Image (cartoon, rainbow, N blue to C red):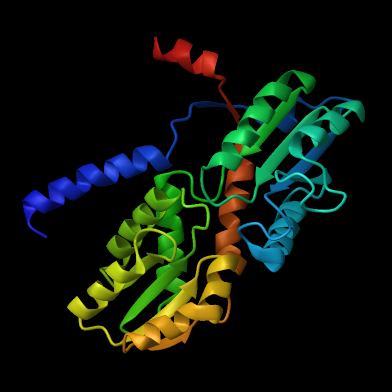
Length: 291
């Protein structure tokens, strides 16, 4: 890539990063250090629905990891899609119940992969309920800032590289809102792997058509497919493995999707621990700092 195109690409990437990585300010303050006699703490996990982005097995592993890390706290579940999981309340309903039950310290973690409409909805609920608790904190989605992308890319390259010519992280964005995130993931993954790994988004960009053009340009004949999440795994089995093979590629598929791997789930754990240790400033506080 010559210098002119490299500069143009860098500018475009920064626009993508601005869309994907929301600005945030916080201050160091461990929420559990403020607990006194009579206070009650609970950890809450929040999903979109019964399968979410992780699939049922991924959700089970996600919850087990969070519960293990916070075994001294009570544990609850919430679902942002009303009625999607039997007997599981929505986040605002659950917070109301927790307030009535006398909980004072509430630490929440989403199973969302990116910053999207579900996270925005959840942030509004948390902001509204702040006054009902001594501390109410919310952990960020899986890929929130650049360090998350880099950490995930390094794990993929280290643990999933095969004796094939290229690795392909297969994603499926059914809501169509995360193209900037997948584009940035593709850039970081290829940069970390010296062009041996690629990302394909089966419902957006980077597109399958674009990927195949790159495979032909690099004269790649063998690929190893790594499903990013549950929907991608199902799509590979239902259709997309055959689509890759139709293009003359020899294909192998990772036996487990990325969202079931311990290092993947550790990113969620990192975010809930960050939320525990750091209080997010309100919009009013951030505005005051910027003055």
